[in-house]
Length: 139
Image (cartoon, rainbow, N blue to C red; front, side, top):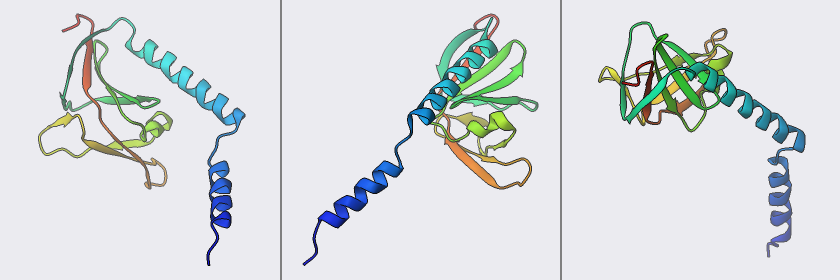
């Protein structure tokens, strides 16, 4: 007859191993606050337009990540923001964002992958949220 106690003890040890230490929690909170500050600086002076399901693709777009938020810089006066569920944060450290779309637009729900720029290995993936256009005139 199998006892449940060893199984419960094993689960408790596994759960404890997955718990963040206070130092890790503080570092994550600090990184999140820094990303929010940097995002605010990136979008300063721009007015958000309406949220949309898709964003047209532009030939020379710069892509930046601020935590789970991705910003496409079309020009100094036009940027698109998409909040993801996370997974593509390494763009901020130089990883390459790869998108595949048959429609010529990036749309909410599309999945992007990231690749390490040095080793060319897979480093993450994320799903786009709605796209918000930011511009100097708010249109």
